[in-house]
Image (cartoon, rainbow, N blue to C red; front, side):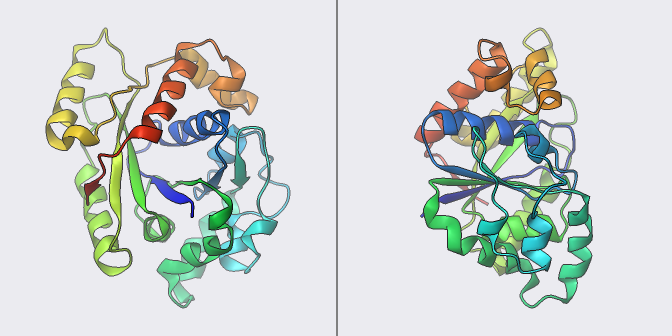
Length: 255
């Protein structure tokens, strides 16, 4: 049965989607079967995986129209994808009337879970019903965190939402770990943020940090993960090392 990992951080611009896409591609490069669920109406993970978000069935169809999730899966060279577009922004409103509204995604994933070793869910940068669905479906939560002054801001709210979801819908939910992103060793506060996060989360913090790298920033505009866009870049190397650490990482902590 595939392990479901939710990528979440309510603070935007922290490298959440970038990490989800590039780690997915790096895991695929290691010959693991992986599915990426784009649960963000912006659809950035979809385009970052080279998928046209305006063609075919999307996560909206799965959640609201009852489309079988297998019929929404798009195969790519970087991993399989269930796309999203702006239609998904209406799903949170429409799900309000649904029976077991917080569990719709978990039930939808059940038929395909055995097909994959890993299922990644890219959450929107909010704590609404789409994120709750992702947290209710997940085994663990991976939190990308930008190495900047306000990095810890909002983390308390995210932790609160994770605890509420754990208590009400998903008692096995754990924190997969923290991945530090946009690290710039020339800036002293990058090191200070890393020390503070390490002090709070300990071994749950991944040793691999993702640097600021222009190739990582350019890759999405070409519809490719950085490993396909610029394989020899520092960014591609970082995500390759992160994938190796991800396979070995066994320091999940309770929410």
